Amino acid sequence: MTALDAGSVTRPSAVHHRTLNVVRLQFVNTQTFVWVPALVLGGAWVLTLLIYWIIRSAGGVDVKIGGGSQAPLWYFLVVGVQAMTLTFPFSQAMSLTRREFYVGSLAAAAVSGFGMSLIFVLLGLIEQATDGYGMNGYFAYLEWVWEAGPLAAGLTYFVSTMLFFIIGFWFATVFKRFGTAKLVIVMLAIGLVVVGLIALVSLRQAWPEVGTWILDAGSLGLTMWAVLVSTLLAIGSYLTLRRMPA
Image 1 (cartoon, one colour):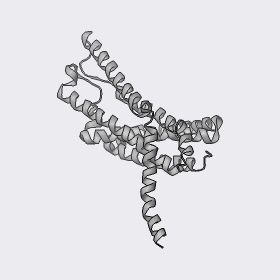
Image 2 (cartoon, helix red, strand yellow; image 1 turned 90 degrees about the vertical axis):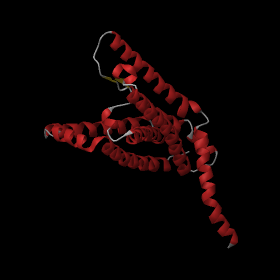
Image 3 (cartoon, one colour; image 1 turned 90 degrees about the horizontal axis):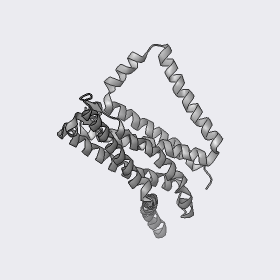
Image 4 (cartoon, one colour; image 1 turned 180 degrees about the horizontal axis):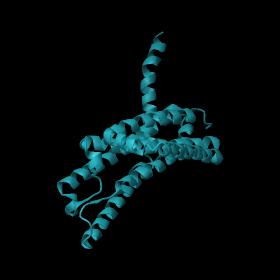
């Protein structure tokens, strides 16, 4: 009885420790989760400011808003793919369970995404304080995203990074389990669903209602919907990973 009780006490901490090992495993190659995302964000920021300076020097429009801050979000698709394809074989060699690998990978992505979100918020605050670097040009501060404040803007950016990571991870899982052909079929099916929804809205001439719903929901409301979508995709990704051979 004593041995059983001891095992029941130590097992959760052991599982927790093994999950942390996955986080450490993901950060062994710091380029994937740290340096390349930072390079993408920094490079997009520098290029955006150069474009603003050129426009200002040429006497162009006064208010300039760029979408360069989206660049790291798209890269998180790649992070999700690499987290799966490059690290999963090592996790199996370390006798880690698929659940531990998945939870640890999500935790690693959350750490990286939180860091990117913090930089995003700091840049937005700097832009507000300096009137867009003195050029009225904005990289991180998008008024619609920031309407609920800096914390809400940071949450939106963080949820977006996690959503893109989960999508990339799931695509990589489908590829590893079923192969290229079925991955392409899945992507085509998703494309058909999106086109079908666009066709449905267009045929019903409901775009004004869709636009009104988006404006009423606001950035924070859409972020909450993104949390729900991310949760559903995360569950689907884990269920796919569970049955994947090592």
